[in-house]
Length: 460
Image 1 (tube, helix red, strand yellow):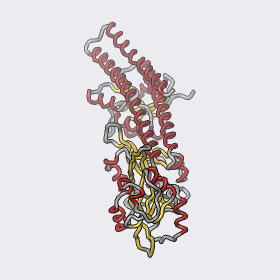
Image 2 (cartoon, rainbow, N blue to C red):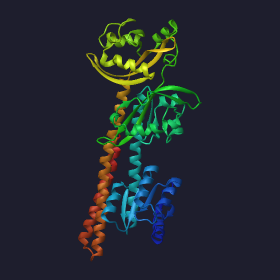
Image 3 (tube, rainbow, N blue to C red):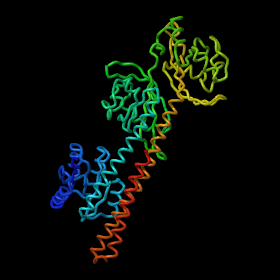
């Protein structure tokens, strides 16, 4: 069995040398001993040790707590703090960073060994839990028929579902960590400021929003094609903090997207419209229906309306609250600009969420005088996104509770060790008190073990 690799961060040369000898005597491999937090982060990235022993008080601009947080967050490496003394504020800050252990100098070989093995075990179990949670999240995402890309709050790709990989040609491993719009070659006005606008758009938190409704992407093969885009901000439960951004993309039917300036060619266009899968209808400025497909007729029946015919008013086919009024159609034609929205609907037969996209086009003589409306039922998409959010919330809640209990145990162990140290410095402690300290410490270590077992049972 290979030796566990340990990185020691200690700015007292003599203590660092003694610690290295002790670790090697215990059977560990000490990769390096460094004195500054900055060097610890760089070396952790290069060597990826099994664990880091980090002194809290270090010389240099980066102290041990800051370095530990960066190592843990960026490289998922467990850290154990070691220190000779700490004020209350520093100790509280160290505990908040959720280390995997906390050793008070001086400590013996048994304490060092048990803390290292406990930390590695706990980290292995926690990593397994995170892998299991990621598998659950990936399964939920793969249920969604549309392409889904999940990014962190800075827009860097975290995960993609299988449809996103198929559609773009990029496996997750190739684009993970890259900006979404950069990785996918998105060409839209204001691309560089879009992410910032998303993050300050609080009114749509946790729901899908069209922002913008249409984009162009570049696939791995260099092909470019349009896609319909919806974005959702996923926030921490009970907080305004944004955890992730979901990008849901769907390829529109290329032959059926109305293009400005293209004249209706009559029968051939009507045949294409009838072949479309989503409900589709075109209307003039006065809301008279000029064409529609079978899916639109079925949608009308869903709302309890009679089958539509060409020439009737749009509001005879669909209710105004759902499809919009004449003012919206007139505005779209005058501005020559597409418009997208979502509508949640409850009827006698159930409830659903629809995405509606209004697109101006020329019906004759090259003049924009009509609007095509494409309607998609996105209920399954919404449900899948909500399930995804629930999986994340449940996992984070349970992980937070277990972590907080573990942190409390770590804090108690550190406090007990400090009490013993202070008592000896002030004149020594009795054998009975020494036994009490040892018993309390052993009890807390037993709680640590039970916590690890609990984490294992949760995913069985």
